[in-house]
Image (cartoon, rainbow, N blue to C red; front, side, top):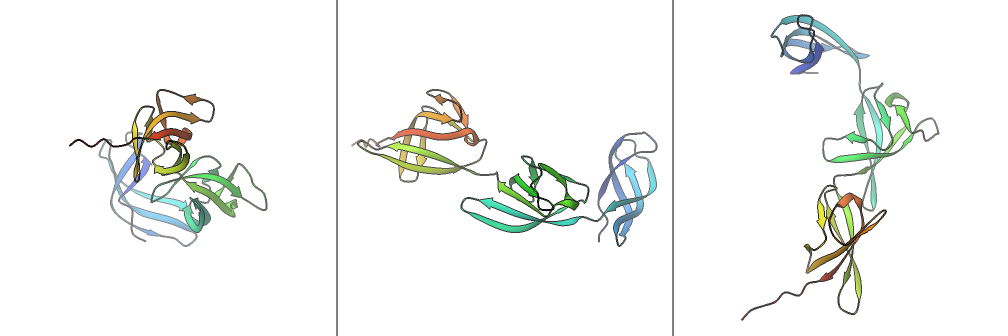
Length: 201
């Protein structure tokens, strides 16, 4: 295993806990990760030899849901790292929210990674926004993918594939807005009507 480029340590010279640049060192250990080497404090520049020990990470089973499917994968975590339902998971690509934890046949609200049998999560970097679009004598359902913090504004025109839709109200979990702005993750449904393009000769 390659030595890290930096470590977060408490400096013995200035007392600041912060990044220390690794000047040289090696990583070993069978049951835990042992680093031995020389580091330099970013705050005061003091150089010293250190030996650090930390538990080896675990491969925790992760069931990731997105849209209509679930994919089994694993996530690397420290044994004492706490997994909490409703909190965000640090993933290499995108964001995910923990929806459930399986531990010893139970579904606790939180558990240490070493006690977790599986984590259930849903991707949170994209959400579906549902639309009800008025097309004259009929209303049709549509939906669009958006970032959770992408804002939809009453009075704006939104492109939905072949159609351009004027938003006239937005329903959230507790109210219907006829003016204002709502982030995609809070939207239950957007109501709008198709805007016909005018062509000039």
